[in-house]
Image 1 (tube, rainbow, N blue to C red):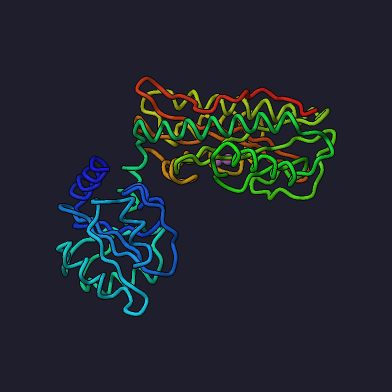
Image 2 (cartoon, rainbow, N blue to C red):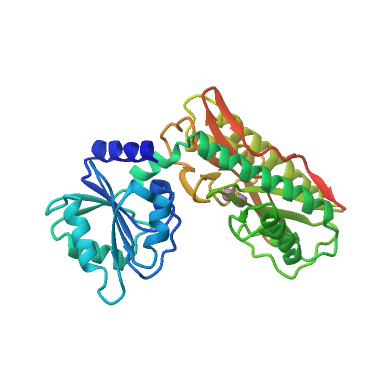
Length: 367
Ligand code: CO
Ligand code: CO
């Protein structure tokens, strides 16, 4: 954690920040290994550009937090009858923050009451979005982070294999999703998000919630699931056929498969960007005549959050650094008919890119 703190402070210096304010969530986990619930009691970590970070923390959480984060922080516990104001004021003072200080905050994570508390404790400070700074740091995974992701991938692929072997026509989407989530937990992980099993016409909805529909002959069935191991997520999608899907759905499958391969190939080129990968995958689908039916970006970064930078999308023009992990998940969705998506988790390496997910991509039939 010490090296991580020094990387963060080095980034603060480079970006001209005096401090970084982080509330419970994945950035606090990244900073100090702390998993804290974003409750209504003020919890905020202030990391100055130099020196020891401070943590304002509810008194009832203090012992557990101090046990995990140890000497990373100086602690400022507060209890319910006094409120957090005094603890925050002392933390701010001891972090040497003053009027005019530039304080990085998490624009997409911090809540209004947390920002108001900081504004009150730091009148005249400038609160600046630190999302790009945190993205730049978190995008590059170190060896331990990659190792955790490999385990998360292994678990999601093994459990998918187990579940697919049990699935039969006539089973309901929801029951299959439940079986998969139970298998993920049995393997010592948590589901990374609500596991999706989308069959037949439902597979044409990329955000379908698994429901009552039973699998039937001719269906395409989209399985989308992820596992979390030591905080790090995996995210895989495979599409299967039940019995005999239409010729059109078979053709759609082949196109998505080719788009996925083109995306992975583009990722392995030196200087690959989110845009170059998105373009490579999208062109395959456009040339096949289904461009308007590929209705989302090609992928998203993955790590402590299931969706995080970098985004694999037009306009994402920064070269992806070695250690960046993200999904490649082209899809084609024909409303009322069916859909296909094939999703892999990929890491940029010194000599190209590696797909962490290796589950077979060719069309498989469920019995
Ligand atoms: Co997914
Ligand atoms: Co995904």
